[in-house]
Image (cartoon, rainbow over all chains, first blue to last red; front, side, top):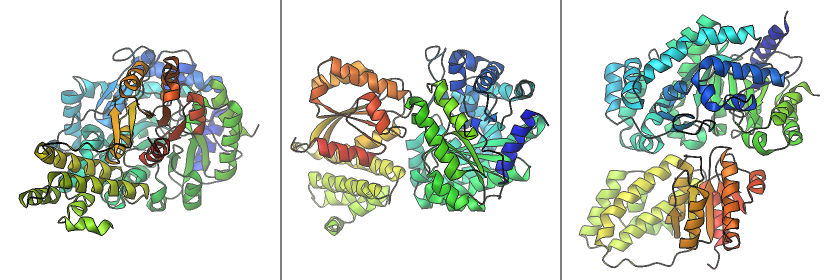
Length: 366
Length: 216
């Protein structure tokens, strides 16, 4: 059994809530991987294989991590998930400045009818090209088609990864496309129309992500949630427009034998108990330090693996000792079983190497 | 005391319950009956204050604040032209606020602006991706007691620090109290940037502003 297999098994055992020799630790590096390996962010975004190389180099430099969250990255993924433009380094921003999602409300209220009439897949393809930019759909497809090469490179470098496919809920796709404020107006002014569109989006929503993950042997799929967090929405809105869809997606992914990785930004504490309706010992709940992770352990510790949540601010501006102490307290309180140590969301681009090393060291207890 | 507001044909309640069409219809009826325009606006403002209080208690959420603000805006646009001589009410204080350079997030900042505005502050919103020099210029021209620096990215910490340094270099640091806000901020970030206080939501911003503008 190779060291790489041992790392993979350690993570699989954490997901299944089985005993582990130590808490696994995963890097969600993205822009940080580029910065810490001396690659400009413009170059990092220019080619998914270069992004993979940056992740490999960062993973090797750190040495003792068990996996990376995703072996590569492309701005096209953000276009796809947010249904909007992304300001990119080297194009709209200086060479080494982090990309930013530009939430500008490209989707119009009449698009809800179009989604119902055309179906989500055809609508999204046309929308990306018409509103986000010419060729944006093809850019995303090219990125997806490059996944086998990315996976081969990661495997060759003995860098385990959790996922390659990304998905989100109808709420997030529509909210990103409309912009948060405009989408909020829709939820109050035309709730039935929004609901019809959401329902029309569900058939086939997960198919491409599941197919891709199966084809390349990826263990999990990244399922994101950010604006649909419990902290952002009243209970009636969340119950009607968020959870039924999230639950459906998670069940579809799990039924395909793939680990749903619930990447949940912001605070979901209020609704943690609802996650008990998701398949047991199958999912990863990835928190960004805004959800009460200790409460998550109390409510869901016997039901799903928890991942996170060293605060980005601490990784960015804390000392290695502070990061180590914080990470050790997470290992003690949330581990040892059913827990994966990770940053809360991405490792910030400006996090010093020593701070990430301190987080990884904490998983080893040394 | 809150029950008094219901007397104005449920305007406050309609806004609080997000019934936009009802709220605007009530405004029309009140105006037809000769209800003073300024009083209509005041009822709407009180509804927003009530929403803000409920937000602090966790009873309403960001969408309700945004939608409430939208209804308030519609009422304001309808009523303000009717107000011949705008009564200049005493303001609780002056605040300059913006999302710092390199960061384009505005939802949190906009809610802070809305809540400060309806609570009687004169708010100068500089928008997003605001360069340090623009904060300095705004402090010179508006003479605020409080400056709010917003940011969602950890990269914003560096911009916040540079902005506060620029304010100090311009000799204006002693004139203003500076708060930083956004979900990744904490005391450590406040110490790093040199801010006087920090908060993660509108309630925290309100509390800081109230403390710093007492007697202003």
